[in-house]
Length: 409
Image 1 (tube, rainbow, N blue to C red):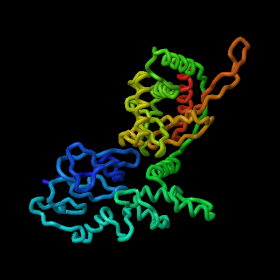
Image 2 (cartoon, rainbow, N blue to C red; image 1 turned 180 degrees about the vertical axis):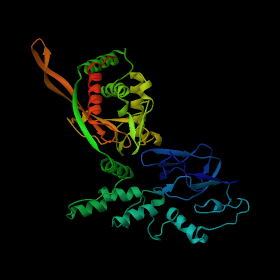
Image 3 (tube, one colour; image 1 turned 135 degrees about the vertical axis):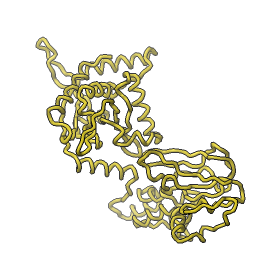
Image 4 (cartoon, one colour; image 1 turned 90 degrees about the horizontal axis):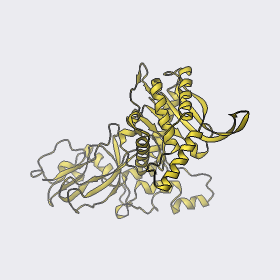
């Protein structure tokens, strides 16, 4: 009996996924566990394996198509079996062995609308996916001269985006004719980031306090770790950012009001620290959470921070870990970029976020009437004044400073 291949639901907040590549073609023989296609959510990428043995009888969506979760994507069965019962939009499914053979063009108008958007192009001359065609038409792009990179030369969304960004020969020609600018559509990730940032600033009372901390202890520890790694006596490559996150967790345990979510008419204060860490990726900014970070020692925390950051960059992070509600507090480190001071934006409903800046050498009293230059790291705490008052926020930031300056590993 034929079986459907269903678009999985990756996380409670995911409603649609985009098919990025088909590994099998219609008519191919498949076995359980064979890779059928790859797909992505707004921030993560996945691959789907075949749920059974047989042949890939039909695929209902092209590469580049945006598919609602839990919808039939394809059908696997034996040659000659009917697939009509599995066509997206069908409200009734007769038994496979008795279902009449139904062509796509014979389906009702309502069903045909769904299938037409998913299965075939409305342009009889140009092979182009429905989603790619909509994008081109919305941007006023003439796609007739584009060479498609999809199956059988079909134009897919990636081809349109390349043309709009200037990667195609057609767009380069327009540029040479004197165009003053190029226009590129926002990616799904950028749309989400833009919406979240705007919503955060529009719907909260954000203030930022700046402070700096002496990082001589952290730098000494980092030098010892590097020497240990070179000598083979140290196994954990613990970074400055790992140490700072460790200090933040210690401070949050003393000031739990910063480890909270502001929910409008209530404040949810957490007893555990689920630490969010801002990660810059090729697809945009992601903020995965390290769950139960307060229970970890420093090597464990370092390992987990690297693990979630690597998963974000590879595109296989668990979608549940990048929801804004997954973390209780976030750290964003721009020190490697040389940023001396900045105003991080809160990842609502979290009540605060810490921005970590670059290290600057400043004159300081070393004791015994001796002055010298001391390395200080900038700390920028943005907090929601609806949830935290200025006094407690300052004391919390000072506690982070003291944890850094008294660091011992």
